[in-house]
Amino acid sequence: MNTTELFDHLSEKLKSQFGDDFIGGEIQYDFPVLIVEKKRIIDVLQFLKTTPELNFNFLTTLCGIHMPENKGSELAVMYQLHNMVENWRIRVKIFMEDGDTKVPSVTSIWPAANWMERQEYDFFGFKFVGHPDLRRILNMDEMNYFPMRKEYPLEDGSRDDKNDKMFGR
Amino acid sequence: MSIDIQPKHKPEGLEGAGYFATSLDKVVGLARANSLWPLPFATSCCGIEFMATMASHYDLARFGSERLSFSPRQADLLMVMGTISKKMGPILRQVYEQMAEPKWVLSMGACASSGGIFDTYSVLQGIDRIIPVDVYIPGCPPRPEQVLDGILKIQELTRSEAIRRRDTPEYKAMLATYGIE
View 1 (cartoon, rainbow over the protein chains, first blue to last red):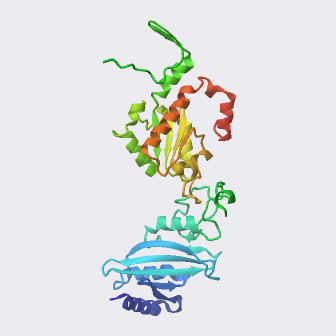
View 2 (tube, one colour):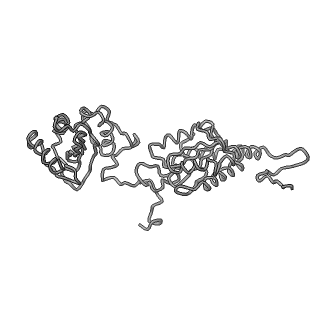
View 3 (cartoon, rainbow over the protein chains, first blue to last red):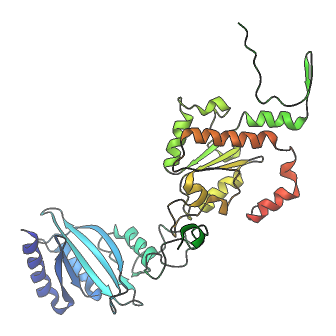
């Protein structure tokens, strides 16, 4: 099954199972990307994992996305799944408004999501509901903001040698 | 064949047959300078250069630093080599505080000295924001020759340091600016 066939197959499956809660998707960079409603994400991932012919039993990675220019759906979480039997790889995305950052935790499906969700909390501030131990994992505990959100500068504000005198900015 | 051996760092003093008299400061300084125990706090590529400095080709042991101390309590010289993230800052500071006086700090490479190319939210922009530094070695990473030069600079400081310097109010005030009592 090639990528297009896989995408059509999965779209059909999700459409019949979840109806309008399956929003759509597209093929990006040879990867089927499926977009679903945030409130059904646990059901969708459980369905993809446990349905025998789909068998997406491995959560490769999970990451947050912040796109401030997408008004109304600024934030997203992407789940990358792998069917190791057929070697199918897909992405499932959920979108949400800035300010509505509560996301159901998938640690009940894959315990390995524990640290991944902590990392996305650390960098984007997603509140994973149902996570057993949601606290920062990489940044210092005293950090009081979420550095990968676009409103914060990448550079360290305390540095004083990069002024106009030195770099002609 | 006779070779006229001149000790390079022989202190000034009064000399005669069978005796040599000088001030205690100078003797202690001489002893300290030639038996520094460095504590390598190596976090990245500068640490690799330091390994070369320690190994047989460059051989740091020639300068009296044969023995690296991996316990801060037995070390004289803290060598910070590599990027220090803000999360690691308190750990570095704790290591510094655990060292016994007298102690010196050498900051090796652009990252330890200024944050280097890592001008980012997670990286400490120079270790001198949390602990006092005696000698900075520039470079990214510096060559082993530069590390040896830095060690020799530390030795110069050590040799010429007054024996009661660490008890002076100026020294305590300097530490207080870093919040170290």
